[in-house]
Amino acid sequence: MENAPQKMQFAVRARRNDTHGSEAQCKSASIALDTDLAGRTDAFNPAELLLAALSACMIKGIERVVPMLKFELRGVEVLVDGVRQDVPPKMESIRYEIIVDTDESDRRIELLHENVRKYGTVFNTVAPGTDLSGVMHRQ
Image 1 (spheres, helix red, strand yellow):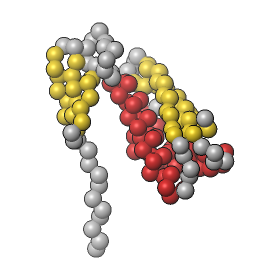
Image 2 (tube, helix red, strand yellow):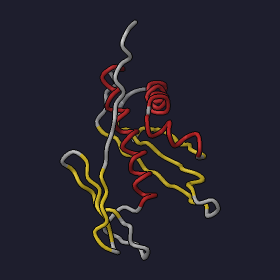
Image 3 (cartoon, rainbow, N blue to C red):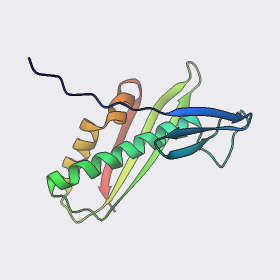
Image 4 (cartoon, rainbow, N blue to C red):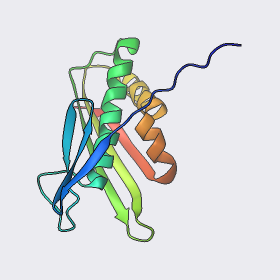
């Protein structure tokens, strides 16, 4: 009987600094968290962190598949907007736009987009509970 491949694991530690904010750490990185009830402009709040994680997932997925597809890429930008519903509190919809700087054909851009949707860990975690949709196009 073969051994099952080891699953990837992730760990983050978050700590409250004071009533105005917190900090999350993983590996040797840290990020300020907006946990102030009045809000902060110099830190991500939880909903913004979710959108940032989704954006990072999309970009990382692109980085992963570009060499396999031999896709010529000069740059990527991801714009994400979310709408929060109050009862129960959740992100009811998320819209994204992935802008790729490339000379590849529209079909190749769609193939890249299919890979982002199919293989993104955060994308596939968020999608079942959220109206998640978007587009990918060239710059």
